Image (tube, rainbow, N blue to C red; front, side, top):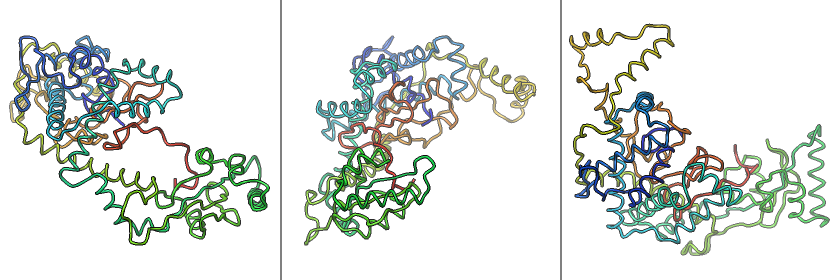
Length: 478
């Protein structure tokens, strides 16, 4: 996941832990206090976002990212295609989004309960080897458990619950919708088979013939009762992921197994085991059918009639659809809101002149290409003949907002509001991106939200973090 937005960087996520929660004392919204001089940056349906709130946000970002000097700050903005104006725009839009979420939550009677947080925290910690490893990851990212909850977990849970509430209110949702989905998929579910397997692969210079013979010998031992299938799994299977679960690889309709495996399963009934080993690109499989689902006579009338895994799959599908619908809903909700952004006042500490840093960057790029840097005077003359030059004192592109349509939800947010600059922006810190409402759980040993440890898709049950998948299932298509 690459850096795409000022308010989504991992460093800025750590800012939330310090500035927004502790200094402002108002969670992620932080719009209620008085800024210096009482200046108002924007209003959202009559609610103020103070200029000081925006300034503090940027100041803490600079401190957290080692950009406190004007030189470092100017170079960073130029390198990431920002100006002070676009930085302010993105931070304001971030707060606008949080205000609108809070207002919508009140309208839809949505709240994040302590039980939701406890469940999500439990699943987040399960992603780490130990409680200590989790605490070390938080410390490395400049957060405590409390600030992680307030700046990452709670906002994501709120967005997830709000997305679910919107889906239920506008399109129908909940268990009734799941049941309708199950009924429409009854033909697909009918006859589904759950299997376990033992995977054997060549050891050393073992030939394919010898490996096949070893697999057949193990089948013969299981059939003779010399060893149980479960013991054969634990002692022999080289698919560590499924071996930890007694060889279970789940239901065929919920997985994408390789052709050889799928064909072999088709000929098995409940309790059957393949009479001979099944060869695939992974090695030789000994497959046992452990369950078969048959749709009851009269059809599916209750979710209780379905295996838990089927219901979970349906919920995931519902969550994905809810996320897409929520993006559209938020865009309309944002358009219908009364949002006023006031002009940028003079004298803001982060509003430095970036022209010298733009010139230095151009000279550096030109030197790297072996060409002289462009003459600003000549450029001005050309502009006078037809092209419009930037207004005096303005940084090039200073008033240029990020490209429209770059929804923040593209990286995992259910709602797309934060606009992102052009692709190719480099992260100021670890390179991790973390969107408000879709923040990633801290990766073990890395800063919170390290690339690769993704938080669950928006709308997953209670928004709880999903632990990394257990071991690769060998029969699945790679």
